[in-house]
Image (cartoon, rainbow, N blue to C red; front, top):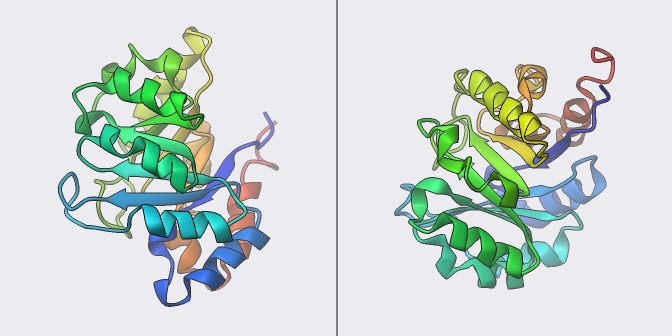
Length: 224
């Protein structure tokens, strides 16, 4: 198996005093997507940024914007984030009573549709909508704060999700978000993920572009 995974640096960990420089660094790097966490202060304790900032990012960043809506009732904002430049829109299974409807709403905008699951949430919650998904985001920390440690129970959860997808001949992107770095990326990929969201590991490293490249190259020598 060749390493064909994607790297999605999380802008939440960037230095907002020099956001333009950090976005230009992402443009010049081997990153595939830019991961953008939207927090509403209700679904998660923190508040991050809204559509106007995303629109500005989309004008500066040449990578597709992977927008992760950590907000209650996300269907209210799907169209506006798509208009702001989101190319992937992910909502939480725990944040909406009408998951299928919201997935279809996302797809109707032309964006790729993703669903995220918190660490305590079972894969069974999305098995009825897997055919409709372009991406499943497995949270490997509790959402709302950067810099948390990876929850290793995520690995068997990933393996199970990959088995379910393979049995049903489905191939959504399987993304892992939270505590991802050079120390655990290979284990995450081997468990079934193919998109790595990395925040602190990238933006707080001495050489972010080199870190992105190292994450991108993981598996190229050890996997056959």
